[in-house]
Amino acid sequence: RRRVLVPGAGLGRLMWEVVQSGFECQGNEWSYFMLFMGNYVLNCTNEVHQHTLYPYITTASNVVNTEDPLRPIRIPDVVPPELPKDADFSMCAGDFVEVYWGQLDEWDCILSCFFLDTARNVVEYVETMARALRPGGWWINLGPLLYHWEGITDEMSLELSWSQLRRVIQSMGFTLHREEWRSCTYGRDNRSMMTSHFQCIFFAAHKHAP
Image 1 (cartoon, rainbow, N blue to C red):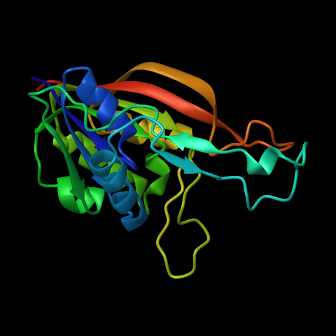
Image 2 (cartoon, rainbow, N blue to C red; image 1 turned 90 degrees about the vertical axis):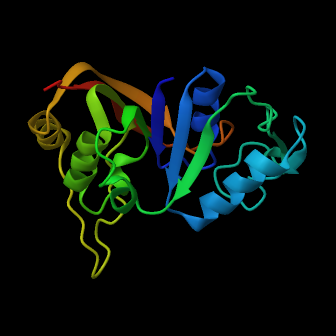
């Protein structure tokens, strides 16, 4: 069975979808906030719409209708513990480079979603992907380049343009077979007078066989 790695797994939804499709999957997450909540959602919920949240209640700006901030959101929309009986589904806590640098040729596919720009040094991320993937493996990515550490005092941050990062990816033994720009929202309120859109880079990269 093909092994899929999802770095920056967040609350685990992409991992869950991968496992439902019949693959072995491991997520990796660094944030304690994501790990705590992801553990709760994946392991401690047992029915659809079990919890009601009010994510817009603190918003007072760009409101169209007075009642809009009072709208509830019910989660989850699936039952996370309902997995195939033979599912191989795990989460690994820690820094992506530290955890996976030494895992040579271990993974058939890596799925990175809104992840690359979390790096202090994005070149290290690419090199870790290249080391962890088996020859002939695939790396599929979607996300912007909103570098999280940019401008933070006493923190290293290497900010490459997409054209520079593209050359780095190719230099690490990858061939880009698909490359598209996709408009994506993030954490939006679809009734708000203001929404944020990213022009995200989507690509599928194939690691060369020796």
